[in-house]
Length: 235
Image (cartoon, rainbow, N blue to C red; front, side, top):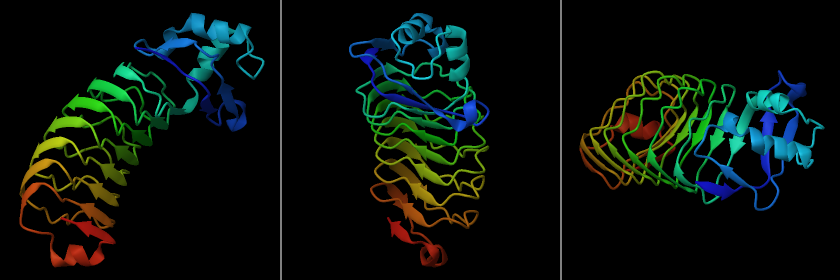
């Protein structure tokens, strides 16, 4: 899974250099093998340092790798990346954007990213079931739409901060959970799947404002009370 990457902006957390932005401009035609864990790319980082591609004056590989542990945002969206996701061991990562690529295989549970707030994997070719993401208690936005995901939707037992949940345009089956574990949920998009059963009351979602359930095989309709407090509704 080699792919040329350019202009990756890495934002350091406030614990390193006062929230500075570290710009790694990868030299044209430089291949980065994403099938391996990021910390294994010693030669790549040494090369970047020697070529002056790292704009902070850093030349020590150990220091560079240490800074990687402080990365809080990684945006590789729309890079034509192919293959399976590596095990990203970036413990301070808050934003992971890998949308609009050709990534495939099963979704990892991202248990090595406990500080993740924003996960965007839409517009890829992921297959298999959706993990419960039980180690992502700080997650606020989850985008998995436009993939090939199958199976039932988990109840997401440990995502109390989740506000945005986009699972539309997959091949998900079974009934819709009541999502009683998601009190902060504001946006729920489950359209264009193969969901069955009755439409839940969503009584435990007081902040829900957008609900899209169209193009499924559901029974019944949303209650009048819920419909009245929604800003957008489509079934």
